[in-house]
Length: 381
Image 1: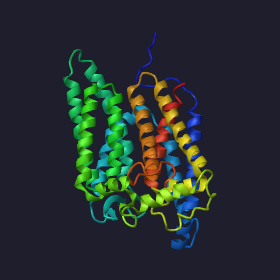
Image 2: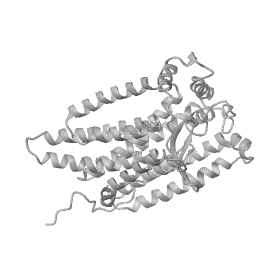
Image 3: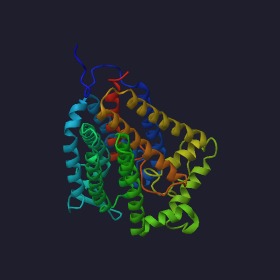
Image 4: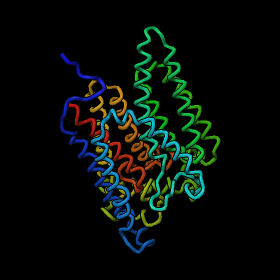
C-alpha cells in the first residue's frame, strides 16, 4: 500500500467558490466606493472625474488579479522552497528605499521605490513574504524539535531566532518609519508562532516583549503618543492632530441607518484627509449607512470563516495550515484595525482597508495572498 506524502496534496477539487465570491464582492465594493470618493479630487487635480479609478484598475486591480491567477497554479512545495529567497529579496528592497534616486520620500517617510515606470511599497510585500517564510521555517523547526524526545532546547533556539528575525524587520520598518505595517507583521507572526504548537510560555514571552517594545516605540516618537492622546480626547487638538479622527467620526455618524446615498457624501469634498485610501470606509459609511457598513463587515467575517475553514480541512501539511492561517489573519486584522480607527476605537495608523482602499502595492499583495488561499482550497474537500 502506497502512503500519501504528508507534504503534498493529492486530491483535486474545485476552488472555494464562496471565497471567490467574497473577494469579488469586496473588489466590486472597492471600485464603487473609490469611484465616489475620488471623483471630486480627481476632477480638481486632473480635470477627469475617473482618473484615480482608472489608475486603480490599471495599476492595482488588473495586476493583482493576474498575480492571483499565477499563484493559484504555483505548487505549494515550490513556494515553500523559494520562501527564504523571496524574503531576502524583499529585505533588500527595504534597504533600497533609503538610497537616493531609487527610494522615494513622501511626508517625511521613506517607504517607496520609484523605478520611473512603476512605484511600489516594499513593506506591503513584506507582509506576504514574511508569512510565507515563517510558515516554512516554523514547520521545519517544530518538526525537528518534536523529534528530540524529552528535549526542549531546540524550541528555545527557535524562540531566539524568531525574536532576532522580528528585531531585524523592526529596525528596517521603524527606520522608514512604518509602525503600522510593523504592528500588522508582529501580531500576525506572533499568532502564527502560537498556532505552530510551540510551548505556551514562548507566546507569553513574545506577548510581554511586544507590549514593552510597542510602549517604548510610542513614547520614543511624540507623534505616535499624540495619536493615543487624541484617541482618548478627540477635542484635544480638533483643528490639528485630531482633525482626521474628528472628521472620520462625523462622516460615519452622518450616514445614519441607511446612508445619504451613493455619491452623496459631503466629507469627500476636501473635509476628510485620505478619503480615498485609509479613510475610505468613512465615505462608504456616510453613503451606505449602518446597514451598508454592517454588510461590509459581514463580508469580511465570511472571508475569515472560509480562511480558517480551509486551514481546518487541510490534510497533514503544517506549512499549508500555518500559511492559510497567517494569510487569513493578516487580511482580517488589517481590515478591522482600519475600521476600528475610523470609528474612534483605535488610533489612526495609516492602515489601508483590504481590497477597497486606493493604492496598488497593498491590493496586489492581498490578491496574491488570495490566489495562494484558493490554490490550497482546490486541493481540500
